[in-house]
Image (cartoon, rainbow, N blue to C red; front, side):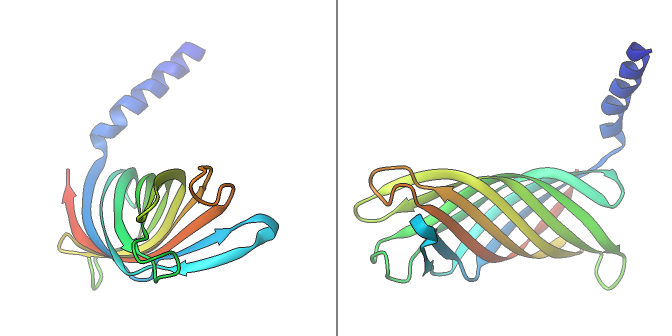
Amino acid sequence: MKKYLLAVLLAVVMVAPAFAIAELDLKVGYIVEPTVVQTGSNEYKCGYSQDPSYSVGADLYVYLIDSIGIGGGLSYVFDSKFDGHLGEDAKLGSGNAFVAIKPILAENGLVDKVYLLGQLGMGVTNYNDDKKNFSEAGLYWGAGVGIEKWSIIVEVLYSVNYWDHSGSEWESGWSFTNRRLAINAGLRFGL
């Protein structure tokens, strides 16, 4: 009996992608208000503002169910300078890899689609200034909403990168949180 159940499950897993609809979303973004919060011992916190920045990204979704896309993606946030508290040359950016979900809320109205976005994965944050240069990995998540009209997408995405610094060249043992609000625009390609 177990062999039959396994065979049926395997057949479903292998055949389901043939009936799935896939899409690729390519996008560029403008990061409106990036900030970094530094947390140390005794829950000491200090916040830093960054200059606006830009991002590029690609998401690949498969629709096994009509209104829920699941997949993954990559994004790169270009370095942006701090507002002066960490020195004139201090910059921070990140690269992120994530699994994603894209539930469709409405279709065929004023716009072709209205959807939510959920992302969870790993980010590598890059810091550099005139004396230090390092990268730290940590948790990444993002949540947002988007619209699509004629394969053109526009999204508002709030995302967060976390990391702990363990190197000797900058506050070892401190935790950091980088928050961003992005406005993304791009194209959707059906596959």
